[in-house]
Length: 90
Image 1 (tube, rainbow, N blue to C red):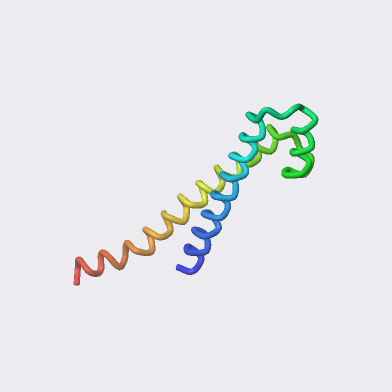
Image 2 (cartoon, one colour):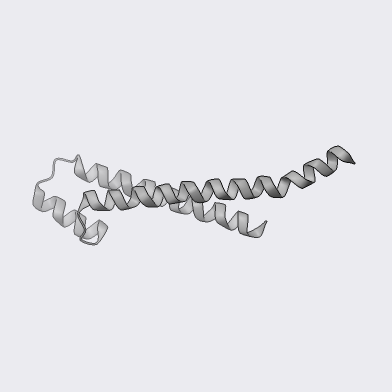
């Protein structure tokens, strides 16, 4: 059960951090800044990569977090299933 809780915690952390970074990237893209300002912001906030590439990478991380969350939920239901059947039988 410990690893399921850790998996859910990691899933939530990755999900929310990636979501915030995607929103920040989209905010930069749709701002009224010039291309030089966008490049400077990209270097400052994303380590020099293109904003579009960073949004793509964060989307993949977001998908990975969703998959991890699904796996953790499946594990939690498997752990709970024997306890529920014992209560029904007992």
